[in-house]
Length: 132
Image (cartoon, rainbow, N blue to C red; front, side, top):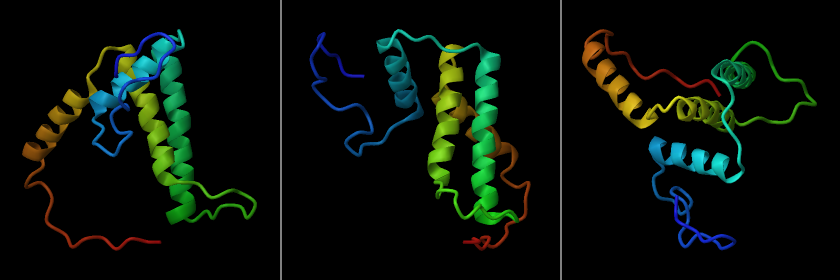
C-alpha cells in the first residue's frame, strides 16, 4: 500500500488499480490496510467461517441458477458469478489475515502438491462443453 500523509491522497494507485497484476499477497495487504484505516479488527475465526459459509451459499445459488435445475425467479436480479466468488475470496482473505497466513505462499505450496501428486492421476479428457 502506498504511503500517504494524514489527509492527503496516495501518490500512486494501489496494486491492481491501474491494470497491473494483483497478487494474493497484494490483496491481503490492501484488505488489512483498509481494516486498519477504519480501526476495525477481524472477527473471531468461527464467525468468519459462518460468513464464508454464507458467501459459499450465494456462489452455489448462482451456479444453480446458471447451470442447475433451479431457474432463478423472474423478479430476481441477475447475479455475477465472478463477484460472488470474489466475495468468498474476500472472506478467506480476512480469515487468513486474522491468523497471519500468507495465502500466496499457501497457494503456491498447494499447486506444487497437486502438480506432483495428481500429474498422472486422472486420464486426459477432451475439454468439457460449457453449458450456457
